Length: 402
Image (cartoon, rainbow, N blue to C red):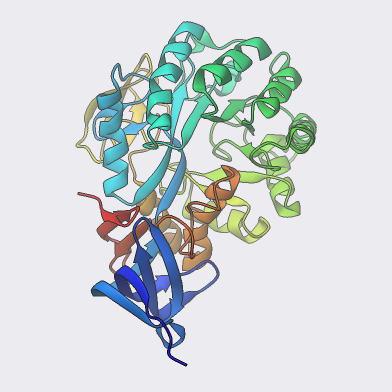
C-alpha cells in the first residue's frame, strides 16, 4: 500500500533544540505558517518539499520575551505612534524574539491609559503578544529606574480600567506585596486574565510568601492564563538578602524550588553575576525560570543618551544607567544574548536555557499551544544560529524576517 507524501513548503535540516533534547540530525517540516513535523531525520515521514535546506548550526524555537521596554532607539513608554513602537518590535524580532510583551514603566494614570490604548493596536494585529505594566504600585525604596512622582498605593479600579482598555492584552503587572491594597490589585489582575508579578519591593520574606500564595489562589480561582504568578527580575529591584533579614528574593526562590512561582532573570552579565544565574537554575524546579531582557531603547544601538519614561538614561559600554543617580536602567541585550550568556558564562545546559526563553514564557502567557517550541501544530517561529548562538536568520510564521 503506497504512502501519500506530505506536502510541505520548507524542509529544514540541522541540529535542532526540540522541547526536551538537542537532536543532532533533525528535520523540521513547515507548511504555510505552521510546523507540520519535527524530529530525527531517520524518523521523518514521507514528504514532498517545495524547498529543502541544510543549516550548519543550531535551529532554535522563536524566543519569547515577556519583559521588554524597547529597542532600536524606540521606547514603548515614550513612543507616540504605533510605527515608532514597531521599531522596537522589529529590532528584537530580527534578533530572534518572535513574540514580545511590551513593558511600560510607572507613570501617571492618564499616561498609562494612553500607552495601553496605543499598544492594544499592536496586540490586535499580532505584532506583540501583550502588555506588561511595571508599576505604579511599587516600592519607592526599590524603584530602580522609575519615577517616584507617580508611585502610588494599589488601585484595583485602575487595574480593571487598564485591562478593559487593553482588550485582553494586559498579560502581567508588577506589584510590590507591601503596597497599600496589594491584595485587591492581585485579585483584580487575576479576574482580568493577567498574571501578578511580584517585585520592585522592600517587603519581608513573610510578606513575599503571603503574596505568592494569594496570587496563586486568585489565578486558580479565576482560571487565568497561568496558575503561577511570577517574580519581576529576581534580585533586581528587591531588598537584598541578609542572613538576619532574608527578604523577598529567598522567599521567591523557595517558591520556585517548590514549583509554585516563575522567576524572571535578567541574565545579561550586567544585572546578575553569572554564578547567581547558575544558582537559580540549580535550585528552581524544572521550567520555573523565565529569561527576560528588561531591554530599553538602546538595545541594538550605540552608546549615548536615551529615555525611559520620564527619566534620562546614559548608556556607556553597553550598560544603561540613570543619568541622575546611576541606577541600572534596563538592559541593552537581545534575548538571544541572554541565552548565550546563560550557556557560555553560567554553564546552563542548552535545552533548559532555551526553554527559559521560549516554552516557559509561552506557558506563562497561556500560548504554548501556539508558540514557544519546535512542535507540530505550532507557528513556524525559528531562529537559525551558529554553534556560538550568533543569529544567522529568523523565521516567523514560516517567513524570513528581513
